[in-house]
Length: 331
Image (cartoon, rainbow, N blue to C red; front, top):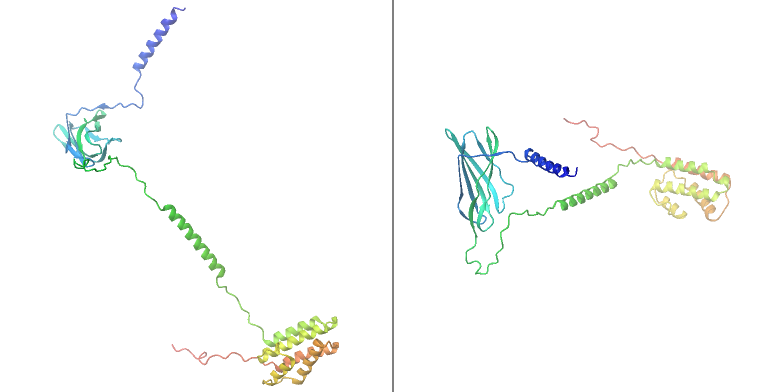
């Protein structure tokens, strides 16, 4: 049994090697055949260029008429920059000639080899590939030969690089937000301080307001509660307020003698001067001399207030329309 183990191991290794040899190609491996054009010519124009200057890499392919060649631009071009390409095809009786002109620029000094260019070939037998042979180009400097002797500080050329550009987007966004906040604040202030439409109720006529004040004083019935002095204070203020507004003077700020003197200088038809003088004297006695007043005296004083309105108040005349208000319009 121990002799059979090495023999079995050798048979397993041989079988594994044969299986790997016969296994199909990986799914991702390229399966295109290499195309065989009838003729290929490659040249660089001009053969010597200055660094960074463009030059033309020309590939002329003669191939069967049923074939079509397309340039597959390489992703990595090394020391070269791919600028653009042109394609031109001319068909003959049995073959065709396709000319590719690729513009490049080099960024390395000396003899630099242009990378081989791959082509996709469409044929009746299926897609194929073709690679043009590489070609060398002589790249010279743009500086004169005596630049080093003159002390020029030279730097090596670099391939194109991405240059970050300053953006004002964040600043503009912040400014826009501040402007919106300021506008909202101004609108809020305008809305809060906007002129409000207030309905102004016209005041009641003087006689109506005075009668209401007398009615309120009567309803309180202060003498019955022992508040005679308070009763005369309020009644005197009502009477003085009525006289001051009726005859347009400061009756509330006048002493009793100043009140009577001011009324005598005015035209006061219907004013019961003697009764007013007695009311003023009686009020002063109760308010300032602590004199006592009976309930009958209080009722008489309140009745004087009503009588004063009846005898002196004259309703104001209605507003007069303008002379042309009722005139018909002339069309």
